[in-house]
Amino acid sequence: MLKGKKIVLGITGSIAAYKACYIIRGLQKKGAEVQVVITPAGKEFITPITLSALTHKPVISEFFSQRDGTWNSHVDIGLWADAMLIAPCTASTLGKMANGVADNMLVTTYLSMKAPVFIAPAMDLDMYAHPSTKRNIDILTGYGCRFIEPASGFLASGLEGKGRMQEPEVIVDAIDHFFNAPSQDLSGRKILITAGPTYEKIDPVRFIGNYSSGKMGFAIAEECARRGAQVQLVAGPVSMTVNHHNINRVDVESCQQMYEACMDIFPNVDVAILCAAVADFRPETVADTKIKRKGDDLMLHLAPNKDIAAALGNIKNNRQVMVGFALETDNEENNAVEKLKKKNLDFIVLNSLKNKGTCFKSDENQIKIISQDGMTEFERKPKTEVAADIVNYLAQIMKPITLS
Image (tube, rainbow, N blue to C red; front, top):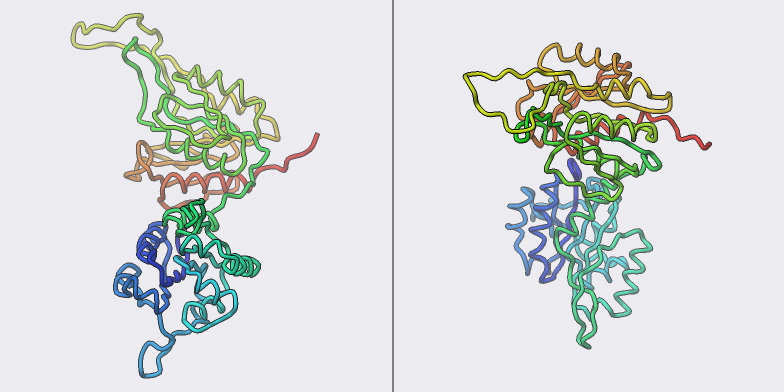
């Protein structure tokens, strides 16, 4: 996400200028604030009115915006921005930037920019392949500019080359990745994560279960993997999929199956994050055939399931970290603190059904993290961002890796 980031978007005189609208929208969707600076030639391809309507800011093009002496300060813009993106950037503008030819507001702004500068070239493929263009790119790269590789096409000779401006979503992703590239603070760590519900069979077609979708656990697994951890994900019956190659998924259905998988994996990991909504009880007996309706009621005798968190807490060593989850409806904090102590957890993530639109099936969550040191409250946000909050907290308390 680019929430709160201030991006200066420079637009030059290229047919690809219309794609700036999609770049603006893409940056805004990620939370960025966009200020457009356009060259006089750029205005021949897209109107400042269109751009201003998208950014809700006046478009900057000239040094002087009025005849009364009012002027646009390129220095102030350079101090305001978190990044400058020039897309599309023509061969002419590349040459001016490389040689300090400050004859328009865009190049002057570039020369005053204190923030990182990204350049998305856009020109004829033969122009891009010309030695003078390559020289200017080398100069600007040496100055610290970051080039977003243009897309491929065919040269006049019939050979494949590059020059066409990269697609807007690729450009936006490049900016996003620069600001949000995952740290590798969990590199070398092995992490067990449980996710989703468990199903406890009544008969071949019925079960006792809950509404857990697995979204929170899977988001945590992806976040840990992105940050370098090797993840063992023990998942109940959910439709979620994993994307990262650092995640090994183990599918289970019942509490007993999840218990056996966790007991097998836990001795060999550094961390266990127990996010699954495990059924506390199971039918005492499971019918071999479908139970038919007879009479007006049906009596089910339930037996307690094994407590996975308590079992792991009993065998946990002093180098391991355990994280639990609590979903409460009343006496929330007291119940969570009791669970924290009883199950030998390092911290516990508290959810509440009182926060409508969070928890089960939702894409959002609102949590509190409770440890022996106190409680930290978080705002409501998407579960992917909640996962980052939880993993950030985990990374802060992790014990250093020691070489044996």
